[in-house]
Picture (cartoon, one colour):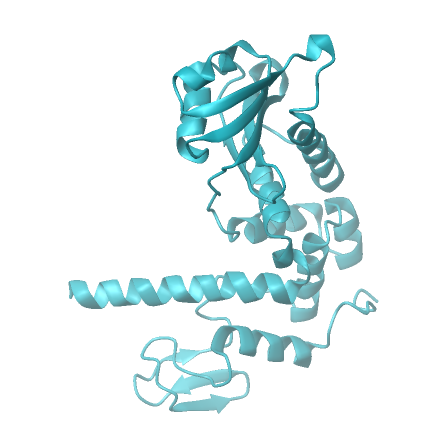
Length: 279
């Protein structure tokens, strides 16, 4: 019943996808890289270094116990922003299990942030009430480039704004903010061309896009995860920003795995080379 979805391939098709993503056109040993491989059912054996491995044994999916179709369904729900409660019903898994898998998928997203330039809007918002956190969010107008910084409290000052600019905003950028005191004379301590919207005077033209981003972020969290705690806020904001900046990753489970499994494989190769050099 749970697999009667057009979006969920057969188990054989999923194995074919995984093999192509992890190994390319030919199976090779993940340790010594030789192609002298023997196959026994769904297991492989390297005739050179005698390593035994499977399709996923040297990836971050090595210890998954879900059937492949069920795993693909959960991943499809996550990439398509199906809420946790609905995903649990579709996959016949507990909400705790769904939260675990969504956390795992999120943890393998790229962690880089763009440097913003040309024309940038910057604003701050607050999550979690008095004991919550402040979020700086910057958006490069006319692009999908965004950057963020989360504080451990709700009282941002000029130093925090300066640190954000120093980390994520290029010099000689046109910077648009609201009329908050932390941005006053901002061009005296960072080389930007500063414009301000005074909201009390019903001025919103210079910050409309980034203000809208906060609204979309809150809707995403409420719809996908129902609520957010302070400890989860950095994870959810990171996921939201990655979805906005790299929408191609979320077209399908295949596209997501194509990027994340290959990144993990490349990271493993680099680690192996470093270990060999140290020896």
